Length: 573
Image 1 (tube, rainbow, N blue to C red):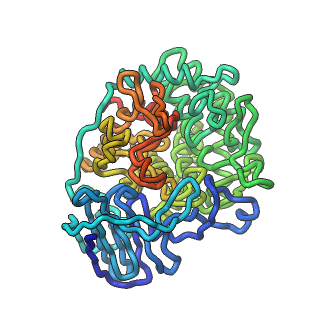
Image 2 (tube, rainbow, N blue to C red):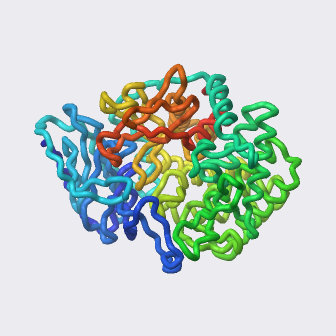
Image 3 (tube, rainbow, N blue to C red):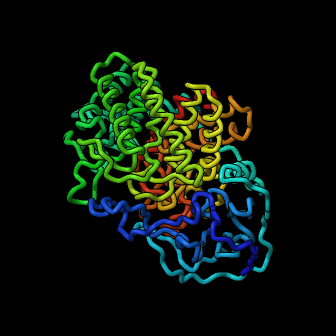
């Protein structure tokens, strides 16, 4: 085994960063639960800010954190020393001599190894650390790397340095397979109308209608964003069905103005609270934020004549204003009936700011814009300045994630677009730099026998979900990358244009079609239906080595992400 050690200064305030794997050392309380982990009412009352048993350092910086290159969006480790005003970065490659490279950190030392060495390996579906029993082959060659030490004033500068250097190793990068825009629209609309339209309730469902656990969600991965995109891309039928989907959404609105998590196949409202007694009325704040933003876009761009939708949008906007004024945050979960926070301390509601900006213009209500600005300032100070956002997905507790980071980026760009105030542009750039840390910067080499290797899949521009669910995925969950195009237009920085194109162009190669079918990891293999885009871009071995480069047979939110990209980014399709 080859290894390289880098001795670094010891300090109590080191910010330890591994892209898409470790943010500030992942120093959170650990709650050991089966997947998906959920808070109980008793735990929420204790004001917990927890994550599952993912790789992390102790709160005092003790311990060791280890990762294989497949766990990272960019093979890299960065350290920020606030007291020294200094940043250290070690960049490396995926492989050397045919073996994956690993990175580890302990106080005072960074180590690169080849093959990747981990004393403990993170495994799924029960998020936990397992003792590693692997035997490592002998390799005595060189490990490619670049070691950088730079003056660095703060976390914002730290992420700017990373953003500007994330491709410094010149790792493999080629154009992905690409369907034409017209062909994608044709396939996606046909699939949605055939498999996602629920005629009984008259709405576009998430996933497919024959899957009992994926019928309807009010946000996060479906609901109004699918309806909006279908109406924008389709014809009269899709606009009619989009409107019906939006009106169905209003049936899921609680007394407070926030939305229930969804409904079952018979239209009965369901809760996001999965922690037993006392969580029956819990709703993901993120879902209501999604709802507000995409209802407003629907009203302003598709059909602004539906009174029930107008009233529902205003009720939701008012709920966000009321919660902000009473709590000073939007939190992770809220009570759908009372509108009060049940679990706080999260950036999950970051997209609500963009929704409130749109609502301020539509309803001519300046208070909405004021709250959107206050919230954006809060998320900038509380999250970005600490180098991380958390809690966007509903199945990760307070773990760090990409979804809330991209949602905050969207809100900040919408704010700058509305107000033209330069400080929002600076904050949006900061958010984009954080988002780039979740976005794969090179083309991963999959095992030759894997499905993604067979189809020649390129990973540049795919996005890791969070530090718990360790797969990359096609698309932003669940937005288009249009905010990055806006940053390019405003700043002329070509790195934003590059990141924008990579995220937008990577999607369609993961679409299964009759001409280019994609098969699952089942035995025997199953062919994914035409139009399916599965979320799994497994670079990591979190689901076992056998599933690196594999995927399950399922219809996922990436289809909606592709629809939104087709709407917002027509010039590069």
